[in-house]
Image (cartoon, rainbow, N blue to C red):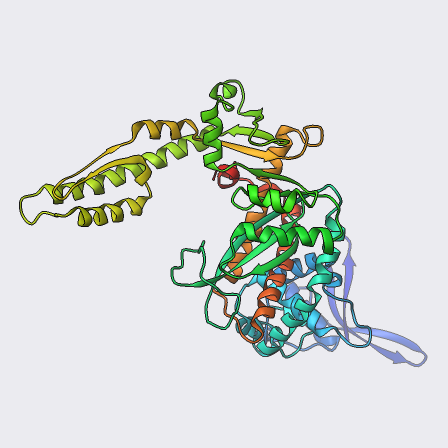
Length: 499
């Protein structure tokens, strides 16, 4: 039996249920039922049954979903990683059997982008029994446990030199800009030999930390990363980066771009200049004040524009490009005034304690301790003149000093050894501001590794953990280049040197 639709001139077609039969040597057909009055969905249902289908009740779902794993974000991130050659960069593909350590590292890198978590949580998200996405299926990982992930980090640590050399060959050329910045992250636990107490940028008092330096190409693409003891000062990491550029990467000449707290005069004299490298950095506040006091820096330079090139005998063979940012100047003035007023309110309360008749505060030592606690709260001691005696306390603003500091609000000076013919003033300032791209990458990593715990071979894992973060940042940087400047624009990144 079958259903046949017969045209009917200007009227709706006739829908007939028919069957065919044999009459001798001839095949004939006869009509069993006229279905023209049936609803279209009933006709199609009967047509499906006649073709061998199964009838499903209207209230019953034709499919039963046993499991559905999120896939879209995995396809986007994993596809980007493969498109930029990250798999080939991590390690060669084994033709005889899968390169499981490489696949596990790829899984951890992608997980850092889509769902950062601990190694235990990442292993559960990849394991088929508890999968949180299709990532484990896409990489054909099968069963995964956290010990395999830590073993993959050891494998990655052994490949770090080769990976960084390949990235340097791809992104660093002789004479190019190299961005370098240092940050830190606090560490939970006591098993990591790198964890030491130092200048804690996270505000976590009493926590040990590690320090890491990130080397990037001019476009912000991460090239190399190195982990240091937590009590290592920023300038102390520069020599290792110079050796890395000259020896491991065999680059004869580059321009190192770093912030003013890292590329100090001592590092220039001892590391960069002897190695034949150029630099772009900025002056610290005392050096900027010395320029203004010595007459080399005149405020009239900024009457027509917010950028001026000057020279100073204190910085021979260097160019100084002084910039002025009115928005930053207003913000500096507002913040300083707010902090001074807050300090004055607390100092007024302390003066009232000394002057009151009932149980007054007495003794110069005790009054000095109380004053120190107040001034240390807002860090405004330099702006007050204090008079402390056994039974007397008075304070007043240093108006001249405040005015001198206010005159330099919004000013910062970029210093470089490059001649103007190689890189003009505006390009030199832009090169220094490009450090904001390294800051974004550092912030991205910190959001995925702060407070991490270290197990097993702690020194190896520390370096490998950050190598994985660097690779994840490499992909993050590629996404940034695809999506445009939205990652680097915004008031928090303008004029980074004066921040």
